[in-house]
Amino acid sequence: MHRIGVVGAGYVGLTTAACLAHLGHDVVCADVDEAKVERLRRNEVDLVEPGLAELLEQHDIEFTTVFPRDVDFLFVCVPTPSGEHGEADLTAVHDVVAQVPENTVLVLKSTVPVGTARGIAHQPAVSNPEFLREGHAVEDFLRPQRVVVGSADQDAARRVAALYGDVPVVLTDNTTAELVKYACNSFLAVKLSFVNTLAELCEHVGADIDGVTEGMRLDERIGAAFLRPGPGWGGSCLPKDTRALLSTASAQNVEFATVRAAVDTNDHQVRRIAQMIEGDRIGLLGLTFKAGTNDLRDSPALAIARLLDGEVSAYDPAIRHDVDGITVVGTPEELADGRDVLVVLTEWPEFAELDWPALADRMTTPVLVDTRGVVPAAKVREAGFRLLSVGHPD
Ligand code: UGA
Image 1 (tube, rainbow, N blue to C red):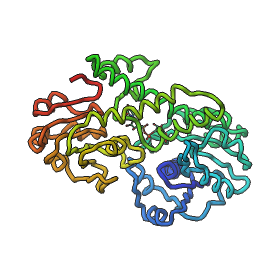
Image 2: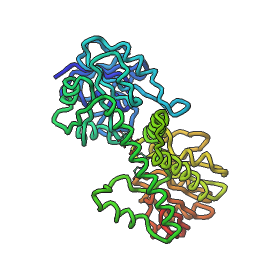
Image 3: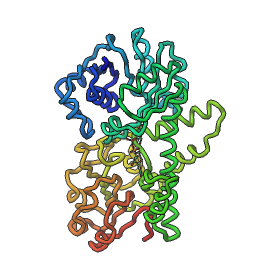
Image 4: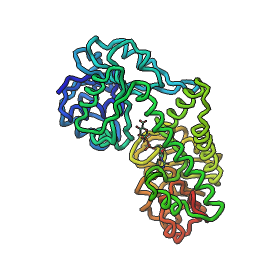
């Protein structure tokens, strides 16, 4: 077992630190945010990540603001936000790389533009992109469908892969490993935009998106996942990584038309949903970019809310504070009070189980827009609602 440093205590860094400790390694995790480090030392985690708090409790991880120097491997898990033109801002990555001691294997987990590792002087440098879904990060780390490791030093890459235990490994060079990350997230975005347009078409021709996608998902070449239509895809990864891939491609004079179309389709989806919502007093059911997280970054719910003219309130089981001028209330009933329309924007399972007659009673005009296809249509209509459901004809 090894001594491992993790720099960055966001959801990727913290998951990496906790899971590597769980796999038996001796882990030190550093972050520049002193208050966060203090909280972590008290075992306080502000992420909604199942299993993470338990792992941090079980294992003795050292949290520090001091750069870890006495380590065999150093995982870089700092953010790489999008710059003005879609390019990734690598300031934090370069700061870390400049401090890595000699003889330490540098492991780049942060999502970095294709070609970044090749330009790094420190050796060995292993590109090891993460494929952690928010809300499933621990599970995805401990039972990965694959671990991708790329390096000019294949022995170092193999040693990094071995840290994960017995898992499927893709062993390659740095640049290829970097591109895998963008390829995966962009492919998922293409799949989702395809389905969102298909849902729009279903509404026009009188077909049902659930039946269409059921017929698609049973074809193993297409695959079962990422076929649910929604208000548009969001979060801290898909929007950022599609922009970054487009920017990389255009720097090489490559027109990545499918990804460009996926991004444009997503913008269209947000506008289309906003147009479906009519009323002066609007209640949003869900604000987070997906269920199972309290993350609001690049949430389509907020993008849609910005386009609405009426007065907007919201209920979200993971959000307790007002957001972007939207009043956040404590229960769905409170949300329904005096509203003209309710809109389901996040697929929280509890939204399938609401007391529809009680909600309808509290509203001025019971109209429900379901962008996630999660409400039981027959029950909702029976309760007196007019239901507009994405991908389902009236
Ligand atoms: C995504 C990838 O799934 C992870 O593999 C990757 O590691 C991560 O980005 C990252 O780059 O760090 P995440 O952003 O947590 O994970 O969210 P997803 O579960 O992929 O969902 C992305 C968006 O697609 C959400 O807005 C979600 O609501 C939407 N979505 C997903 C749908 O609208 N329909 C679906 O069927 C699936």
